[in-house]
Image (cartoon, rainbow, N blue to C red; front, side, top):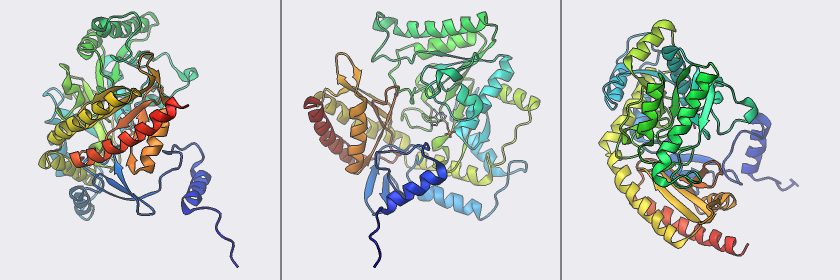
Length: 440
Ligand SMILES: Cc1ncc(COP(=O)(O)O)c(C=O)c1O
C-alpha cells in the first residue's frame, strides 16, 4: 500500500524552487500562487481558480494579448537576428515610439531590461557631463545592475552607499515635512536637491544629473507638491546636470492623459528610460533621448546589445502600440481609472484605515494608516489585506517605505465591470481587517 502524499503539488513545487533558486528569491503572498494561464485581466491557477489581476503592469495590453502573440509568432517564423543588419522593424518601431515624445527626444536605443536602460542612461549622462554624481529619492529602485543598484537607495544597506549618489526625501504632500507649510513644500524638497548638488561640489564630485520616476511609483505613487518637478528640473539643468526620467513603470499611457508620466509636468527630460509594459512580457526595454546625447555617446563607446531591438522584439513592441491605440486604452485608463478612484474614495469615507487614495490613470495607491491623525503606517494590515484579497481571487500588492500602501495597477484593458469586482472584494476585506484592528 502506498503512503498518502504529505505535500500538495504546490508545496512540492515550492520545495524544489527553494532547492534550485534558494530561499531568498522573492515570492508574493504567505501562500505562494501557482499560476498556469492568463487571458486579458484574468489569471488562472493550477486548480483552475480564476483571479482578477489588479497588479501586473507588464502584461500591459492584457495577458496573452492575441495581437501581440500573433505578431511575435509571425516574426519569429520569418526572421530573428540582432541589430547589425538593416531591418524595417527597428526603424518603424523607434520612429513611431519617439513620435510620442517631445521633438527634442528624437532618438532611441533598445535594450532588454529596464535595468540595462537605466545603466545606459547613467553612462550617457556621465559621458555628456563629465560628472559622476547622481541624485535620486531616498527610497529609489531603478534596477539590478551594479551601477543601477548603486543608486537604489530603497533596498540597499547603508553600508553600500557610495559618494557618487545622494538622495532627497521623497516629495510627499500627504506626510510633508514637519514644520513646513503646504505651499512651501515644493521649495523645501527642491532645497534638498540644491544641498545635494552643493555637497557634490564640496566633495569634488562633478554633478551628472538626477534620475527619478516622474510618478514616484515605487516610492508610493505620491502626490508631489505642485511645481516641484519644474523647479527641480530647472535647478538640475542650471547646475549642468541632466534629467533622466525613469518611465519603466509609469510609461506607455498607464497614467491615461499622456503617453508618458513626465508629460504631466511642464518639463522635458534629457533621457527617458522604458521597459516593463513595452513588450507585454517579452523582454523589450530602451532609452529615448536627445539625439546629440546618443550620437556623442555611441561615437565614444560602441554599444551593442545582442537581444535588444531584434525584429521579433520590435514586432512585439509595435503590436503593443497598435493595441494601445486601436483599443483606445489611454482613454480607458482615464475613464475606468476615474471610476476606480471614485470607488476607492467612497471606501475611504467608510474606513479610517484608508489615509489617502492617490490615482493617475490606471495606477492607484491606497495609503493605509492605523490612525488617520498620526498617519502611522498600517504595515501588518496591508499585508493581511493583500493575502485576504488573494484568497478572494483579486490580486494586488503593496509598495512604499513601510510596505503599507496598497498598489493597484491592472492591465490596461481593465473595465468598470472588473472595477466592481475589485471594489466589492476590497470593501469586504477592509471591513474584516478594520474589525480586527479595533478588536486587536
Ligand atoms: C522604476 C523602475 N525602474 C527600473 C526597473 C528595473 O527594470 P527591470 O527589472 O526590467 O530591469 C524597475 C523594476 O521594478 C522599476 O520599477
